[in-house]
Image 1: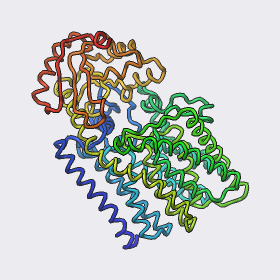
Image 2: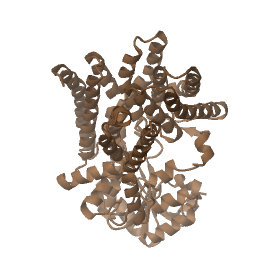
Image 3: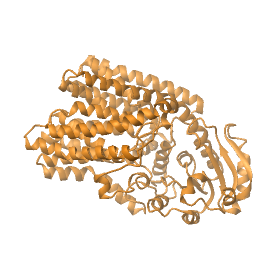
Length: 588
């Protein structure tokens, strides 16, 4: 890299690090160094990493195997660091920060190779940090910044690997790693394999697909051998319901988490990208994008006032009647385009440029994400889409040349919600970290002090599993396969809960009873002995827990421990002792 590009690279990295350090110092002061993460999920990874590093058990506790991580590679990386440095809670923060800097570096390398002007490279990098909410991603302590880097590299070298018989080993290695980072990468891998097939390299297509998914298959077999499902538990809970063949063709969503200012970026970007297909295909593209835009604009403007004030929680837009139909038709047309476009290129003997390949593959990923991907919760699920799109826009713009007035207006329109989104994430980091400390850390301290080796049912498992040695059973299902399987099969009910309590020798439960009404309710004979509440600084409505004795013989012991807790927990933790009362009586 030239000196000018190195200086340009240092500017966004310096800004990223300066703001990150400011947050770290502030958060360390607020939480006394006990938490740096906005969500409890970071500690689920850390719990599994701890148990694997110390006991050789891949699970949320050392007592049983649990395929609870949707990102095995990230979990193994943390586990390796734990093995070397010890159980330090700042290790995921360090890894996330390192990958954020690596992502910025990769963009600069790509811009240099594509001869993007330095000023454009610097501005784009700053936009990537802010509009992708890289600080928000950093302080989740999760794998999304690693995912972004891997997908960016796969996108960039795909043309060489597919059409120029170069870098095949590189793309295989990157894809194999990406396949066990996030499931969203699978659509990109399938897209690359499809282009190998279209280009007449069917043997390479099969080889690439097999090698790329080899880690997924190997990990799945390992999981099944330990009595769990082939996929991580979260897939059964969130991603694998209602997957009929007709659903794949014509998907009509009942609810989508599209606060999709993120997706508006993509819509406008693809109006820039697809300039070479024939008119008929171009019409399909435009119609599908217009369909997306109608739904997304309706959702954005309907929710804009609440989005500005409520921020991260306004991430759900209900699609009903006409909007659901428009969205489904748009998605169907996009699927048709995804199949016809490369066939059209082949029929007309057109050569695929790097811009063609990157934009097509990103289009494939967009369709897949709209179909089953998530939106929301610090906008981490769709962050890779925003990053990749903004990253390749300067390259695509150089190809298009001078932007028309419509293109400029489109870019202006999409910048408004993304800027709002960026500020929202920044202001939400501190209260989210603070509530995770008050709720999850202090609950973990309580459990560690009194219940190591004891069976306990929870629905907030991360920090408790990481800090303590309790026999945690996750009644949401993310950490316990028995629960995930029962929910997936529609068999999770009150009787199932009783059976789980017996199987895992559960003595107490600290849960939110209202969450389980849809399953028939928690067992009515469980004795409520107290409540546990922290202020609604963040995640309003979910900071109130009910403490129950599952084993009635454990009632007096549990009450005594609750009484002791008020002497060592901070005053923000409001613990109230209640006369032992059957839950069924209170829920009437």
